[in-house]
Length: 376
Length: 145
Image: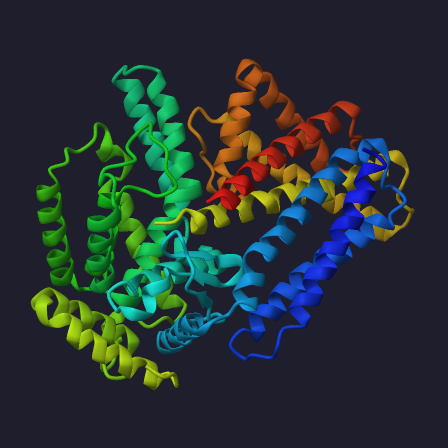
């Protein structure tokens, strides 16, 4: 390994140089320039750090070998991330990507987004996702043809905001989460329930801390930005894709929290913003959806997503969004020139007259692209 | 509904911790091995590295030491929950001793006057290996999605 690692490092430096050169050779396109520069800087930083280690006389010292190997892994992973995400985003930037990128730019401008707008690509095989560290969002290929799914773009913006402004958005929520799990574990002990329950709560904490909290916050940021439209879109998405509204429950694992709890998080934000009626309307449709689905509530489900935690988090996220100067959906302008207003108008029309919706939507989308300087 | 968004967050937190441990640990080891030049700048860098490691070790100890997963938000925010779960599982047989060792080690690292022993370095290497394994696991999940 003492000889092998320097070889690996040299290969990695070469790969980074190759990625850097490809990024530098891209034709100038103002829409992707900032992201290309960001990716360039990332691989060039790795390359320089690798070269620095290659020049370090301590490379090859046995006691340091595990640590140098682990650093190599981190650099290699980061280079692979650049190669897998930002590079294809900027190198294969196509017409649907340009449309959605411009749309995201307009949206972020209108909501006073405090960071650089994301680069959006329309080639996802896994619905919407973001690589927040690189300000990249990926959507399904046909998202340029509909308005109803666009609230999910705001959910991905929520992931980016959380990465940049976690302290502002969360405050000391983690302490509250810890206190809740502590209290539940004491209750389990007091009730002399099986000892295994303690481990289930440990697992619950890890899921909240590492995963679910991020999803809840992203949902809540989206609700702050785009309002009830995000709630309607949540129901639409669940109607098409949800396996179970009450999964995961205690003892189960998943990257995302349960759809039912997410819906309650959305309604909580609407309530904090003084839009309780809109929340009730979304919740009514959701309840109807659940009744039709006929799915029973999973055992121990309630302890995983207590209303007190969701409501507290909603209050913190709304306050955090306001501190960051973001515009809430309740201050949106005219649907003729405001993206958030247009999305909510689309949902209002879809819900009130689904038969006439397609024709109306088609016209609005054509107008939208024209307004963004693109042919329909 | 994709897992990429949340996994990329997890990966970032995990890889930053892994890098932080290794960068600091390399400096401490180099000093032990006499591989660093003398001078105030070097001394200051080593003290900083020891303090960083001390904070991380203390955070892990707090998170592992509680009967519940964590009682201090500051510690919890520094160390991913999955790493704590991994350590809890790996050290199930000798968790109490492991906690004692970690608590003592955090104290040693925080005090520049105290020497770091070979056993201390081994303990730090084990922690680095756990953080590395967790980061690699999240990365593989991220690239598989």
